[in-house]
Image (cartoon, rainbow, N blue to C red; front, side):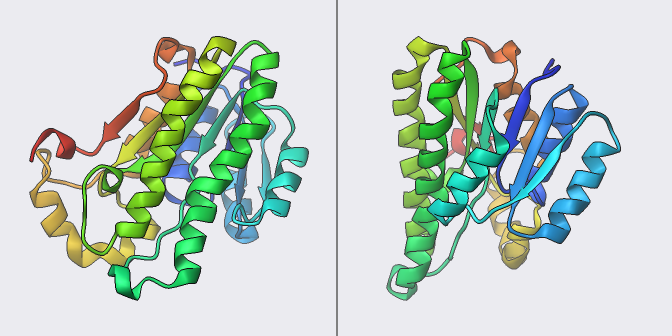
Length: 243
């Protein structure tokens, strides 16, 4: 895979899948801008990137805030690829899901990628093309108790992925998504007691490492995937292949 000189913006890049995506993209030659809310963690990841090669940046931003998003877009400048990785969940039965949690999930998981894509896809098209990768979950297509609002927000993101592929494909901009299964990230630690049950239903019988998901994301950013658009790629150990 080759990303030499490509500028990539990765949201939610201070830990987990976003962090590994940024690190792997740099290994393949990209110049990466990472963003997240935690300045200390962001600085730590930036240190890992700059120790490797190139000139990379961390921009602190809360993507649930449209004003923060607009500032992020201004400061980051044009990019060749956008990875909408930032995510938020409040896992609870429907009757116990808070209104704030519901709004937060749709703000981060749907509205933020929508606003970022609306800003970046036209500039990518004007520059001759680009790639957008949205990070989804198997919960978007498999009903799971306690994850109704979260699954709905990611299902919306997958629908947007297909619509954007149709809208921007003629302009040379590819839009895809990856749908994660259980992945060993800090965000998944509160679900540690559920992992044995979840992985028992997965053909590979284990959770993913963040690096394995990052590899799929980076591939979709590269020219090697130049004829792939509108796809939602399962990175779930085969979970969607079985009932």
